Length: 407
Image (cartoon, rainbow, N blue to C red; front, side, top):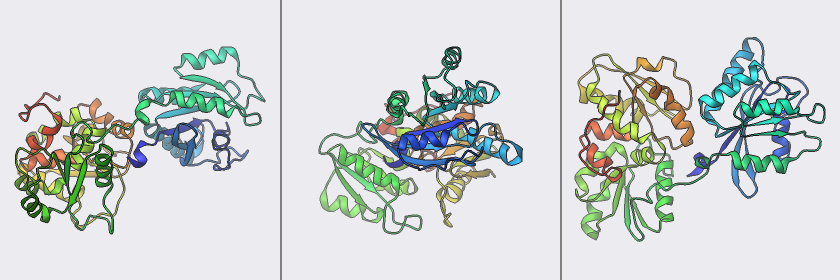
């Protein structure tokens, strides 16, 4: 599925503990700047790297957790935020260190359910003490690795990394594999409008095409204006139709009711989102009150079109449906939400095609903790346009979905 499959591995620790040097050893090339000056790495820096026999990973080099000054505090904040992005953490220590800095990182790893390996670096200068090794292990580390860049036991460290990376970070479940069979015809309805990138399809559409082909099915791609003509001329009965959420009403009218219909966004919601809680949270739309605040979460930063789906269309559709004056805030990429999450009545997350499953679930963690209802772009659109039961029916046993108690 592109970049969101790639496991992310973060290196954390104090300044000058050798995080960048370890990255260079793992990659066997100088891809990170190394200096004896403490604080050389000022912001999280991503480096792509191929582990032989495993596949690509993304290494994230972070600023020291013990940075100082006003700028240092900002760098530490960025470092801690990076933990939400990674599937595995390497806690780099030297001199048998263990104090507030290391404990803060371990607490953050545990809070985000991020497995971690303690790498005791520069063992050529100070060997790893047995007592300290026990303390690292008791802190919850997957393993404790003595290491030095002079006689680097890189293969051993890589073997431990391969074992520690959660399977969910690199396994590739299928988008449609549980919905179709060999030889089935799947119809993709892909509008070419102002938001469509010039000369190409958007990532969810590309992902769907590849997944359909991987499942030995037949993929037919067309625009919404050609759907009626295509069905009439060919008499084809697709096994599944996937549409852009923005044209649900057109697709619902064109596709025979017995043919399963969903959207790219809902497909991604089921594939990597918090689908169970999305199902519960969608009903919150009916309970929105005058002046309620709704949070729109985009997973990528992009140029905003005049009729942007998350910033314009969905707010307009929900406001029209509810008849209420609502306040909509938009947070793009993986930026922090500036307001307390419990000030929102509803959080609406995009499909998340550009981020990993863990990043998406971590992003929604604060809302779940505060019992704030969450849903997905496509599911919200289907709900206010009256096609919700049909749109989710490929993924649930019954088209009659009762309102669950999400609070």
